[in-house]
Image 1: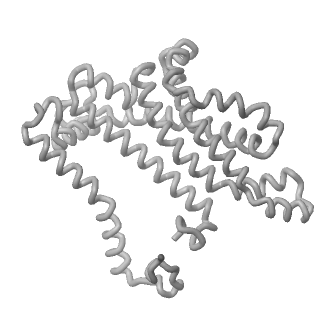
Image 2: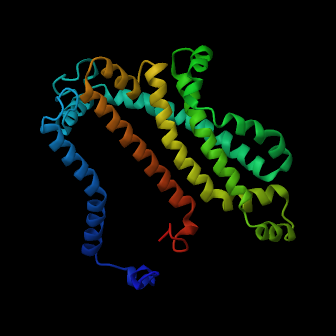
Length: 288
């Protein structure tokens, strides 16, 4: 049962003095940082306990030093990677954005068509459902044969990894639209195109946004996988190259970089979703 503090409050009760707002924000940041700081402290303690050689499990301080040199070129402790982080991150980001944008455009359009028209569902969906269980990494040999060693195989794999989560959520969103809304629109004389644009798509947007957020994580995973095998630049390439030279501090720095960039990508999507789905504010648990 919800407590009294969980119930919506009037707008006047939500107005707080600037000091209280600042304290609330600081408390929110502290809540978000508590678990990462605890994990880092435990990692540092375990690494310094001597249970594993430092070369096999670098301490967070060593990893942060490697990351700082990789980013800023402090003392060339990361050797050939020193100061090259911006270029590596930009290479990976460009592949993610390219493959993700193509997947979003294709999957949303196709998902709406499958969810709305029975003929498209019967003719297209069975083939897609047979392709969906195939792991995207299994396409790597064909991607290299078709596209060579360059950006295109990575973009192709990102497309595959992002396509199906967005597609399935779009289909679900379209099929979950309230029939009464569609009937009301038809009674008002709306054409099929108007029904799709003004009723179906807005009603399906929450599901589509969920698919987009799932897909951005898959996009980063597939980019790194492709860079390990089929590309000679980017964060994934540095990670794999450092593994061969037993530089596990750089390996962990690359993993941290990928996680942070993926997190920032998701934050950007959440900000866009908050703007697009502004009508959810105050009406749903998500918008509280």
